[in-house]
Length: 222
Image (cartoon, rainbow, N blue to C red):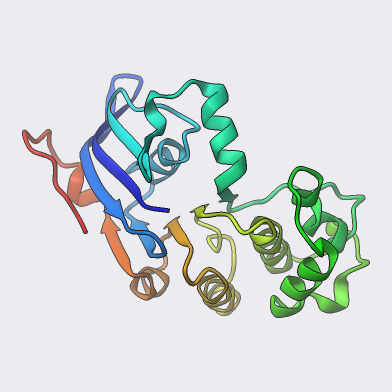
């Protein structure tokens, strides 16, 4: 999925958070969004996902301007095409690891869902924890489980908000390396503070470079 952001502005109260921001991510490419805390990374991801609307500008998925759609239509598109990864994913503590990974199969038709889920969990190093409750998993294991759950229905777009932000350096590196390997050919936009992760992505957008002052013309990053 090709994603573009054209002359987008977002305010939080009276504060301008996203200032006349433009960039595009071609189909199948990974894009890292970096910048200091409070610069608008999460706000940008929420806007790109259609969870929030810009005060100005346009967000486009392929040929569809999602920022012009109703909330219900954006939700339908997001459920069909987009996978969301959060820094602290939420799981039912009473579900097993395998059952949690299979959750998307309740809403999507996924051939051989159980087999695919087990293959993903095996790649992510969770094959010995299939029957284990999610409440007993470590932080790194929960992030890897979230990746498996996100990828099960093969979304065209993945939007990830600092998915390795709560992990130590070793676990973070192993996790983002697995994420990049598993998402080859899939469009992914990720916010991160990790310079190594950002450098491994196809596109790197340092968000603070767009924010210092209001500009007359949008900046475009390819």
